[in-house]
Length: 172
Image 1 (tube, rainbow, N blue to C red):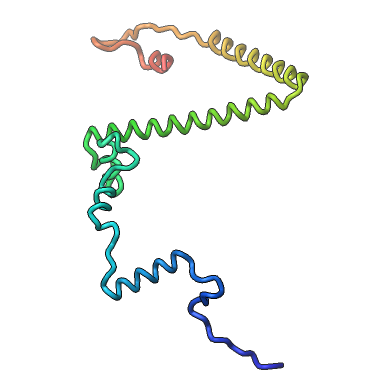
Image 2: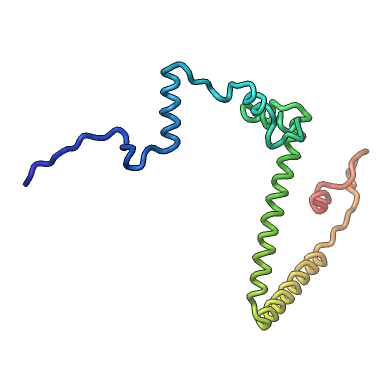
């Protein structure tokens, strides 16, 4: 069995075989500039600071922007009343928008399913829906007819008290 030959590891690919990636070239260039003392952080320039200090996504609502900036490091308890209200409204709108998006997707799926059905399948589906609705209405009506709530005054009541506990439980 021939002895195994170990090759020396190459630390970097040869430029002829494809070169380095853009990220690697940028990192090596920065390191070279740092060693030479000529590198300057681009985000520290006056133009960059002006740009970075501008609100991006919520520039039209400075209160919401301030609330979102505070929430990066803190909690909702750190917000002022106006910021907390702006954040609640924003969250409510996000949830509502997501809900509407999901409903639109569901409507589209339903429309596509209905288009894929034959007329006989649609008729069978409508018959099933009619039967389900009839059963639901029957259940709801039976439930209301069987439970009749009568409110009677409590004989032991004192001033300011109305119904007895059992009546309050019935009224639920």
